[in-house]
Amino acid sequence: MAEAVVSASVSTPSVPVPAALPVRTVLPWAVFVGLLALIALYFVGAEQGATSVFAGTDVHEWVHDGRHLLGFPCH
Amino acid sequence: MYASTVRGLLVRGMLAGLIAGLLAFAVAYVVGEPPVDGSIAVEEAQAAHAGHGAVSEEAAEEEAVSRPVQSTAGLATGVLVYGVALGGIASLAFSFALGRLGRFSPRATAALTAAAAFTTVYLVPFLKYPATPPAVGNPDTIGKRTTLFFLMILLSVLLGIAAVIAGRRLAPRLGNWNATLTAGAGFVAVVAVACLFLPTNDDSVKAGFPAALLWEFRIASLAIQAVLWAVFGIVFGVLAQRLLAPRAANTRPAVEQTAPATG
Ligand SMILES: [Zn+2]
Image (tube, rainbow over the protein chains, first blue to last red):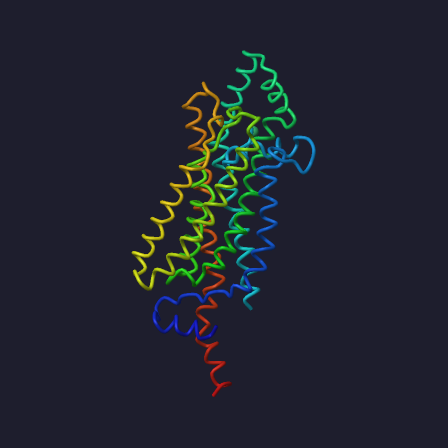
């Protein structure tokens, strides 16, 4: 890690290039947050359209305008 | 140390997504709502004229949440959740990209990440399956249209990631500029072939729907997403730069501190 920072700062002393974050540190965050974010996006973009987790049309109707304007297929 | 950096970036990404969502909501309310209202008026006029069962049922469904609520609180919910969720995802994409794309500062990496997200998550799918206003589509094909749309996003994102990796692999041989052009051309070529072979949504727009209204709606949709990602890129860039710049500046003292231990 230190080596990467040193070699980056040696080649361009004026503009320090940030060291890369290790993949094994980012990956758990990416999987966990990615999953939560996709669930949230599902409720905005697709719930009670093609598929339904909850019965009725309340979720669909509430986010209806956003769903159309953000580009999701709606009805 | 790295874990707290990733967490810090994630929080800043979601915050930037929230701010971007607020501005995108303003654009959506001002330029997006008029064509949505216009489309609903077309839908109701057709329902009244034809007395068609399916269409009048849909018009009745619309009453479940009133139009003033749909166009304000409902629209805000959708756009803000979209902004925060994609802001979080984009901040993690940024965490992977940082220091791996070449000689880019955190701010420049944030701008590149936002541009890539706008292109792969919205623009490319939009070119094949553009946004449609209410009342335009056929309710019987919503399953097919939803599947194709999400498939297109997935394909476009994966191709984008593949292009970035290919570009970085080619850089030592071709140089940064030519490697970027080659990878970009490859991305465009594969996307074009995919667009040719994926099925079209023939029934996503009903015959006789006013073309000017459809155009107005689609430009509004494009504007909302362009504003969302531009604001995200700028705000997240500032926040990420502030978070990471002190660390970059402190690397020399940190190295000096570890040096005596080894010597
Ligand atoms: Zn709809």
